[in-house]
Length: 199
DNA sequence: TGTGCGATCCACT
DNA sequence: GTGGATCGCACAC
Image (cartoon, rainbow, N blue to C red; front, side, top):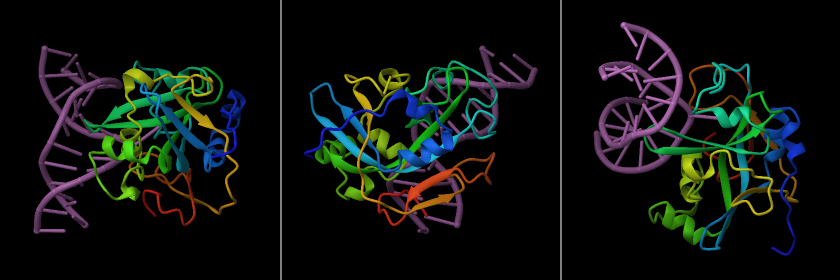
């Protein structure tokens, strides 16, 4: 990488959450480990969750679990589910309006070897980050350390960087793994990208 | 204080 | 294609 990349500004997360989810495709998630090593990947799949959306964790109001979604935009909402998986979301909309974009898949850019270790040593590179639970494990994200973290701060160990990605076709579909709001077409992915979790 | 289940993944058939 | 793993959280009692 020769280009100096900058974090997306907080204002990015104030546009319509569905538009933000679309525009996050092609941008970069960068994770700085305590060791100083950098892990990063291109966002290739997202889903939008809106405040009046029955599939959204915040639909029934604020709880200790989802409180990060009610905070300011440009922060991470990291939660634990199914007894073993972490999920990475980016909080959108002004403080008090609980909306977020779920990051569902990445294309690895930096730190592939460490991601492989974090994923239990699996060899197939496609399997490192082609799903929301997988990418959180590959990036060693935890609720304790990363929930509520500001992803726009320059020193943050988790940032979203602007990236001049080559042009791509975007596919819009319904969301995955939910039981409410199943007909809402708020899932977006880069057409033909091999790291997309599922077609 | 108890109970049911989830924005998933993986192994097995 | 199906079911088990596994536990924090929300909500009912």
